[in-house]
Length: 128
Image (cartoon, rainbow, N blue to C red; front, side):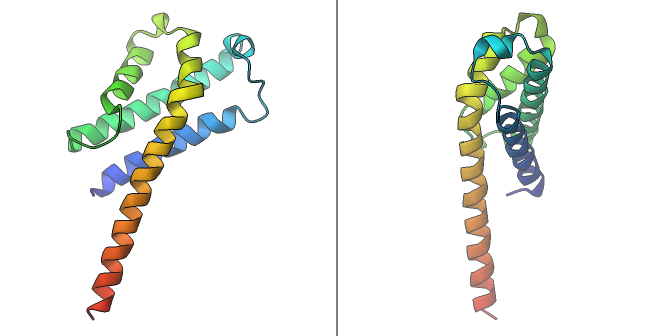
Protein backbone atom coordinates (compact mmCIF):
# COMPACT_ATOMS: atom_id res chain seq x y z
CA UNK A 1 0.00 0.00 0.00
CA UNK A 2 1.20 3.48 -0.89
CA UNK A 3 2.73 5.32 2.09
CA UNK A 4 0.65 8.40 1.31
CA UNK A 5 -2.52 6.34 1.50
CA UNK A 6 -1.47 5.08 4.92
CA UNK A 7 -0.89 8.67 6.05
CA UNK A 8 -4.32 9.72 4.75
CA UNK A 9 -5.98 6.78 6.49
CA UNK A 10 -4.26 7.79 9.70
CA UNK A 11 -5.55 11.36 9.21
CA UNK A 12 -9.08 9.97 8.88
CA UNK A 13 -8.62 7.82 11.98
CA UNK A 14 -7.34 10.81 13.99
CA UNK A 15 -10.22 13.02 12.83
CA UNK A 16 -12.67 10.29 13.93
CA UNK A 17 -10.91 10.08 17.30
CA UNK A 18 -11.14 13.86 17.61
CA UNK A 19 -14.91 13.73 17.15
CA UNK A 20 -15.12 10.89 19.65
CA UNK A 21 -13.14 12.96 22.16
CA UNK A 22 -15.30 16.04 21.60
CA UNK A 23 -18.22 14.12 23.04
CA UNK A 24 -16.56 12.62 26.13
CA UNK A 25 -18.46 14.09 29.10
CA UNK A 26 -20.74 15.93 26.67
CA UNK A 27 -24.49 15.53 27.08
CA UNK A 28 -25.86 12.98 24.62
CA UNK A 29 -28.57 15.40 23.57
CA UNK A 30 -29.23 16.84 20.17
CA UNK A 31 -30.73 20.03 21.61
CA UNK A 32 -27.47 20.81 23.46
CA UNK A 33 -25.41 20.06 20.35
CA UNK A 34 -27.62 22.12 18.04
CA UNK A 35 -27.08 25.19 20.22
CA UNK A 36 -23.31 24.74 20.53
CA UNK A 37 -21.75 26.57 17.58
CA UNK A 38 -18.22 25.68 18.65
CA UNK A 39 -19.02 21.97 18.71
CA UNK A 40 -20.82 22.20 15.38
CA UNK A 41 -17.79 23.90 13.82
CA UNK A 42 -15.44 21.31 15.32
CA UNK A 43 -17.49 18.47 13.81
CA UNK A 44 -17.66 20.25 10.45
CA UNK A 45 -13.88 20.72 10.40
CA UNK A 46 -13.29 17.07 11.26
CA UNK A 47 -15.67 16.00 8.48
CA UNK A 48 -13.75 18.23 6.07
CA UNK A 49 -10.47 16.53 7.03
CA UNK A 50 -11.96 13.04 6.70
CA UNK A 51 -13.45 13.81 3.31
CA UNK A 52 -10.34 15.49 1.95
CA UNK A 53 -8.09 12.64 3.08
CA UNK A 54 -10.40 10.09 1.46
CA UNK A 55 -10.58 12.20 -1.69
CA UNK A 56 -6.77 12.12 -1.88
CA UNK A 57 -6.81 8.34 -1.41
CA UNK A 58 -9.30 7.93 -4.26
CA UNK A 59 -7.17 10.12 -6.54
CA UNK A 60 -4.24 7.76 -5.97
CA UNK A 61 -6.29 4.57 -6.01
CA UNK A 62 -9.79 5.05 -7.51
CA UNK A 63 -10.94 1.54 -6.55
CA UNK A 64 -9.74 1.77 -2.96
CA UNK A 65 -11.88 -0.51 -0.80
CA UNK A 66 -13.37 1.72 1.88
CA UNK A 67 -17.13 1.47 2.44
CA UNK A 68 -18.95 4.66 1.50
CA UNK A 69 -15.76 6.42 0.39
CA UNK A 70 -17.50 8.49 -2.29
CA UNK A 71 -20.35 9.41 0.05
CA UNK A 72 -17.81 10.67 2.59
CA UNK A 73 -16.17 12.86 -0.05
CA UNK A 74 -19.62 14.13 -1.07
CA UNK A 75 -20.35 14.94 2.58
CA UNK A 76 -17.12 16.92 2.77
CA UNK A 77 -18.10 18.80 -0.39
CA UNK A 78 -21.53 19.53 1.04
CA UNK A 79 -20.06 20.92 4.27
CA UNK A 80 -17.60 23.12 2.37
CA UNK A 81 -19.57 24.25 -0.66
CA UNK A 82 -23.17 24.18 0.60
CA UNK A 83 -22.50 24.99 4.23
CA UNK A 84 -25.70 27.00 4.52
CA UNK A 85 -27.74 23.88 3.75
CA UNK A 86 -26.02 21.59 6.30
CA UNK A 87 -28.54 20.89 9.01
CA UNK A 88 -27.53 20.18 12.58
CA UNK A 89 -29.56 16.95 12.41
CA UNK A 90 -27.34 15.82 9.55
CA UNK A 91 -24.17 16.49 11.56
CA UNK A 92 -25.65 14.76 14.62
CA UNK A 93 -26.34 11.69 12.49
CA UNK A 94 -22.72 11.69 11.34
CA UNK A 95 -21.51 11.90 14.94
CA UNK A 96 -23.81 9.19 16.23
CA UNK A 97 -23.79 6.68 13.36
CA UNK A 98 -21.49 7.31 10.45
CA UNK A 99 -18.24 8.51 12.01
CA UNK A 100 -18.02 5.56 14.45
CA UNK A 101 -18.54 3.18 11.50
CA UNK A 102 -15.92 5.00 9.45
CA UNK A 103 -13.47 4.71 12.34
CA UNK A 104 -14.05 0.95 12.52
CA UNK A 105 -13.56 0.56 8.77
CA UNK A 106 -10.34 2.58 8.74
CA UNK A 107 -8.95 0.78 11.80
CA UNK A 108 -9.73 -2.55 10.13
CA UNK A 109 -7.91 -1.54 6.95
CA UNK A 110 -4.90 -0.27 8.92
CA UNK A 111 -4.84 -3.44 11.00
CA UNK A 112 -4.99 -5.64 7.88
CA UNK A 113 -2.14 -3.67 6.36
CA UNK A 114 -0.09 -4.01 9.56
CA UNK A 115 -0.69 -7.77 9.63
CA UNK A 116 0.37 -8.10 5.98
CA UNK A 117 3.42 -5.90 6.53
CA UNK A 118 4.51 -7.86 9.63
CA UNK A 119 3.91 -11.17 7.87
CA UNK A 120 5.97 -10.09 4.86
CA UNK A 121 8.80 -8.83 7.07
CA UNK A 122 8.83 -12.01 9.14
CA UNK A 123 8.97 -14.08 5.97
CA UNK A 124 11.82 -11.93 4.63
CA UNK A 125 13.83 -12.32 7.84
CA UNK A 126 13.21 -16.09 7.84
CA UNK A 127 14.85 -16.32 4.43
CA UNK A 128 18.12 -14.76 5.58
